[in-house]
Length: 246
Image (cartoon, rainbow, N blue to C red; front, side):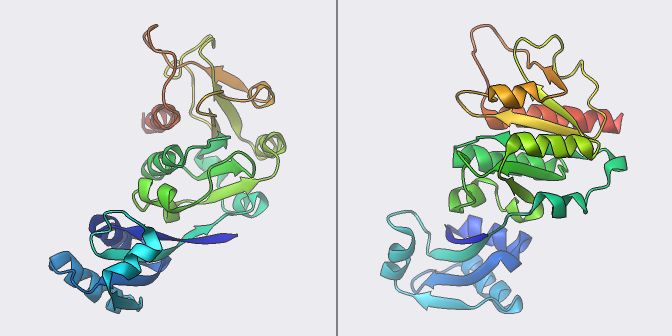
């Protein structure tokens, strides 16, 4: 299922235009907006055959409300979720892919930041559940800095069943736990790997943790209880990537 939303602001829209113009359905530009970025957006929209419309400021207000839209709003497609079995056909297990599985990440900013990290680290896909999971919306899109279209987002009905299928396909499943015997840089992560990132407040659910092949800890000062979910994802993704580059 695809969703449609709005991205606003000159830098955000310009970045999206340069990275993923195919996601822009239509561009709206305030009639008083001037400057090089505005001129470039008009030119690039024409070159990419993206319709754009010059509109009064109240039209932009109707679309995005009282925000600093900087005279530019893009109507965009947030992208489509991918079916798990279809996604498997695109995966080369011999390349030791890294995959993120989000166990009820509910904050859209965290979701977007995780997507940005995953795209930059060459992650092969992000798997999410249908319930208690932030949807693909404009906040996610904007926080991902336009990287959302760069990698597949796989949505599943049952996380535990998805983990079983991932294991059948040859993946090893890694979760985080502060009581784990080894920390994340001591553990061998150079394998087809699924990294599970748990909910912002509760962490991984019991059954999800039980289904992991192994757990790792993230060393922290005792005064700090936990890390932001997107930071944990970044640490583990880049350690897995580092081990592949050794």
